[in-house]
Image (cartoon, rainbow, N blue to C red; front, side, top):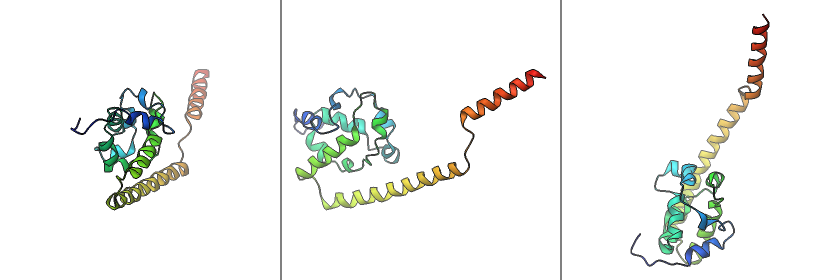
Length: 158
């Protein structure tokens, strides 16, 4: 932990925000980070680390960190979370707090635009891949299994 003063109420303020209700039950399993596409692109970004800093009361460090703005709020982290922590909602609350407390700067806005541009390109690529798969779909698993069973029955009957 840095030498900055700890704010013991910070976690309660964040937990009081919509989606932050389960924040304090996080047991740092790391599934949020493992499922995060932003972490894949930039290993400095870690939902697990951000939650830990919140729980430790590192208000200034969390709210002033430019990485706060990297979250795409895709909610992939929440899908995997066994404690139902809504990290995307937590990030929205943190961003609102950062703006209200004066931690937002024009430089951050430029970084946000760059992240959004890159994320948009990534989304387009994912959509195109989904379209490509839909145009050449593989047989559904049940259809494959049914065909295999039918073939086994035919082979056995001969």
